[in-house]
Length: 355
Image 1 (tube, rainbow, N blue to C red):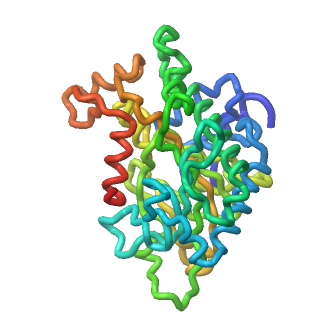
Image 2: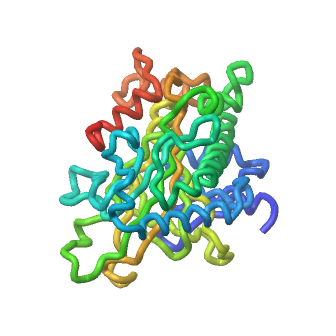
Image 3: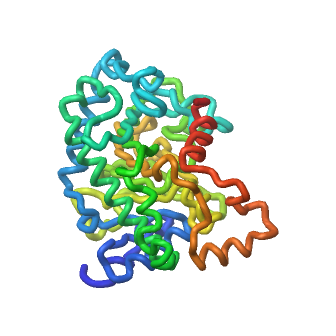
């Protein structure tokens, strides 16, 4: 497909939530990203407009599979509970994370490995386990490309918000996500949802691969493999709706487009104008595959501003108008006290992990 129709194509199968498939290099990209950000905060980004090759993500999936197939004692070399890994870094074993504690009887049926941002010399600032250590440079390069893509999306959002050039214009957010300006909470996360034998004691009506949650930061990039469904988002009506793996089944590609969603920090920063939508990962529904699912892998990059970035009011007429509509509402997020990105992230981590 060519031209504008490529950017406005809608995702999904019948009954699935409508998420736009956007070419970030199209003339209408800023308007389309902004519209989706205000609606539910999810977009698909066409692979050829990401600045990343298919090989980039493929290498991360290969490393992920190699790591999660390693013996437990190897993975435990760098557990998230280790004092050397650092806060929110390292390996999380099965059931370590409970993303929806109010409704889950057991922790999530998944493993994960969190990698924090590298130093300015391109080195990991945490110990890496033996299956990943030889690939430290490739992982760092992938994270750098992910961060560049996030800043490209943030520039388009700033254009959509009509931030004046004198105040920073398209670079208002990107300047606060500058990795050279200081540390941040940005994290690359390798995720593994193992298949469960039907004989295992679990109830797919109650147990879940990733409990309902919203993301903490500014922008999340999610890389997925073909034919590995399970992601759902919560619609405004309170129903769960499927996010398709291949949003354009009539023109399938070798790799699904990158799925992007906005996080709580960006929603907070805009007083809720931009949406951070609750989502989850479920086991296959009845008739859609084995009860315990198949091995499922994904790679996520969670982009955060630099730690000391203050979440001040955004100089945007769209945000001003939205804020004025909330003057008599408890929904207004930015009050008299200015908090930093670090403050915001720490409050969310404390709620989830108690750290």
